[in-house]
Image (cartoon, rainbow, N blue to C red):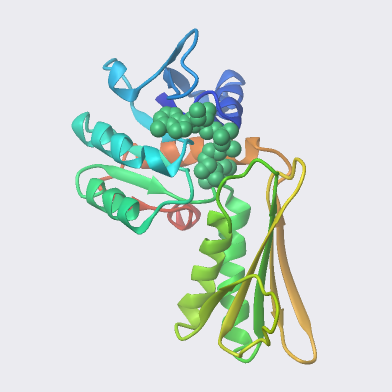
Length: 245
Ligand code: NAD
């Protein structure tokens, strides 16, 4: 499997290059691309590469979505979008591209978080009266808040409680209402990614938690996703699909 790595100079791009160099899933680099760090063997734009490739893996910035999707469709290449923080317009662009090519889109490439989403749904179903609060922590260079993963977890809650609404942090006079799903973002140091869902009744608290120990969990997950998506028809795929096999 030959991969175009978009965002090759970034934290995740580098983690991905390391996993490939270590031989994970026998992946090979087709091209390295990074808009803001063109140097050495890194190309400044996807359009600079027309060589052989099987899949694109994107760990860049949501603003890259249009160019990424245009390139994937033009070259009929499957794409793994691991970038987070997309606007509603960019999500539409992704959906449109998925009519032509297979698109694997997940804000979190770890299998552990896919399990956490599943457990969250089950817990929310079991405790319909519970207060739900989601807390995430990341390193101090992260651009978007709350994290895409926290929003994925919120979607898992909303799947069971469609009448609830998201409340981002609280300050001042902010008494909790029953229909709130609280989301809180902590930014500090070098934290790779921590996500906790609290499911609290008045008599017990169920705490569901995932802690990424290294960026390689996302890099390897993205490679598993790439392997999964290259044999698929056009459409949108998620980690759930991989878990189901
Ligand atoms: P980073 O800032 O370290 O790296 C991003 C890289 O993308 C930079 O080198 C930058 O120059 C490059 N870039 C930005 N815009 C570009 C464009 N238009 N075209 C090509 N390259 C471009 O960030 P990071 O920590 O590596 O994270 C990258 C993205 O991946 C973020 O959105 C982050 O939230 C997301 N992320 C997702 C997962 C997951 O499991 N899905 C895990 C970690 C990070």
